[in-house]
Length: 259
Image 1 (cartoon, rainbow, N blue to C red):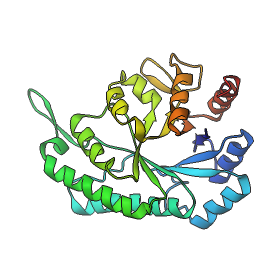
Image 2 (image 1 turned 90 degrees about the vertical axis):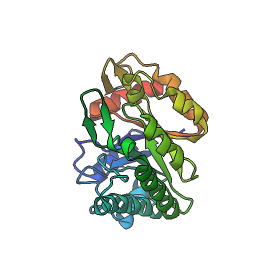
Image 3 (image 1 turned 180 degrees about the horizontal axis):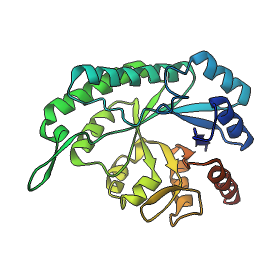
Image 4 (image 1 turned 30 degrees about the horizontal axis):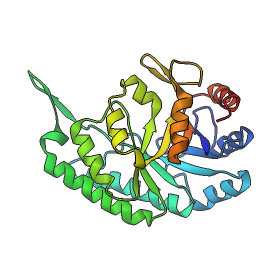
């Protein structure tokens, strides 16, 4: 099973992140495209392939966390979709197996008696946009890249319907963020159980109460059991903590568990 690290705010460059990854004996770095040092304007296939060869590792990508490929304005939607397609193309050119994304709930309206999400209210337009996103991403992946949808604070029914549609394509899979799952009281557990064969990627960290992204051993989670789950599924895992100190601590404890 491969373990990786996220690009951390403390890293002054992608090169420094790669050096740290190699020093810790991890296999990959997940580049978050929300960071200016990692966005698509800063990356080239030549640069990433050179880093892969020099450090003996590979990359995964995390799409911009505000990416919303189903918004209703066609020009805004086209910009988001273009970002995803550029990332998938770069992934294909650099041997990057996974492109991770959040699946947003979108804009909502607070009414006197309820909250209504525009994606739910205008369901057909929403699903049509999701279908188009699935199809162009599938074509761009050319069978070499998995686009994985990550849980955040619980998929609402209209999100599940759209993600179901994405998963009809072999190019799409699921990322399980075990800390998000913990803080959301495992509301997505039945959904992930129904799609157990689609688990491709994991964001692994500890959590306690409403706080996640803690180092292993810093919370209440049975994270070894979750890692064994990823191992059984053939998924890779990012040790998704936020500091170099927490990463070092987590790697040391991971080695003690022989996982």
